Every structure is written in structure tokens, then in C-alpha cells.
Length: 230
Image 1 (cartoon, rainbow, N blue to C red):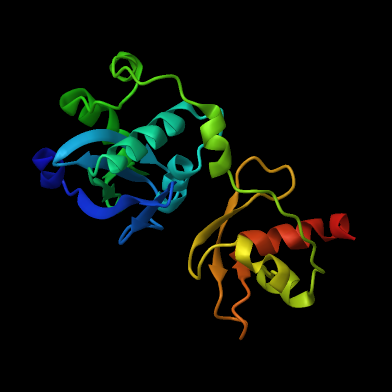
Image 2 (cartoon, rainbow, N blue to C red):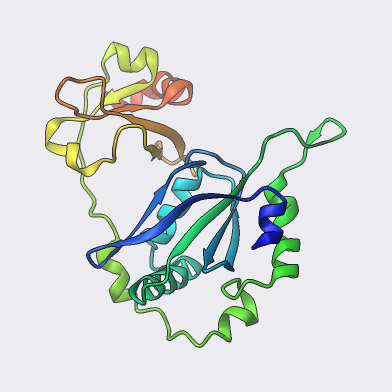
């Protein structure tokens, strides 16, 4: 663990159980992207990964793994097993300051370091033969199903302010299905393969109903596709 601390990894949060469900709490770096992260138990680095997305979005993949995400499922089960045995699982992270360049090109710190950190430290949970040798039983996909959030649909009228500013409000009936104020949310727009990252604003309305702030990308999409929305 000291080798990670020496290069700038910092404590960013931890995993915990809420009833029988896995949950994470992040105290820093939650919205940072291009970031390296590590799961640490009793000073031992068990897993190292990287993500180009916000850290809290990547952690959500471990919290609620889909049935095709084997790494997410395996780490989900491993974390739950450790927590059930009373072992703390901490989240450390190394954010990319954006200051490293090679000539005119930005050097992605997470992409540059991940492979070599895994080669040197050999975390127990990191892929290939090391992962297979742990001896975990095959993931029980029926167990992961309750972790998947239900699908709810709602409609809204594209108001002029939505069109011009790139946000929309969610009605009272659906407020419980969205996260807390300030959380990151992924917006999949029609058939676009990559989501737009927005934020949840629960301070705009007096009753705390969420406003989804998509910014310029959502505004541009509204204005380019208004004819598709009637």
C-alpha cells in the first residue's frame, strides 16, 4: 500500500453493507474522471482499476453489476464477503491532474500507470490466472438480480427553458427513483452509444423534486432533435 501512497493515491471512500445490499460512500474524487482506484483491505491492495468516467459511476458498476459484467460481479461478491466477515474495504484513488503532457498531447495518468502497478503489486483480484486461482464459486446471477434497479418511465413536455438551457424537471411521482442532490447521472440520448453526464439538482424546486442538468450537450441534443419529440 505504501507504494501507492508514495505516488499520490489518497483515501477516497469505503464500502459498507446496508441490510443485505452493498453500498459505497465517497468522501473525495467522486466526480473525478480519468482516475486510478484501488480496493484496500487491512493495508493490502486487493484490486487496481482505472476509469475514464466519474469515480462514483464506476463504483456503481460494482454496486449493481449487470449479468454480463463478470469482473463487476466477482468484485461485488468479494467485497460483500469481506464486509460480512467484518473486514473493512477502503477505496483509494489517484486523480489525473491533467498537467502531464508529451509534447502537445495530454498523457493519461491512469492509462499509463495501471498495467505497471498491477505487474509490480500483483493485486489478488486482478484478472486472468490470478483471478481464476482465487477459487470463488461461479457468480450466482440470481443473487445479482435484486441489485439491479427497476425500470421506470415518464414523459415531459419540452419547455422553452429546457430547450434553451439543457435541463428538464422530473415529476413528484418519480422523485424517489433518482439520487441525491449533486449526484452524477448518465443520460442516454436516443441511439447515441455514449451517455451525456448530467447532475441531479434537488434545490431548484421547493418540494425537492429533481431537476436533471445536462448542460450544453443536452441543450444541443434538444435543439437538434426537437422534431423527433413532437
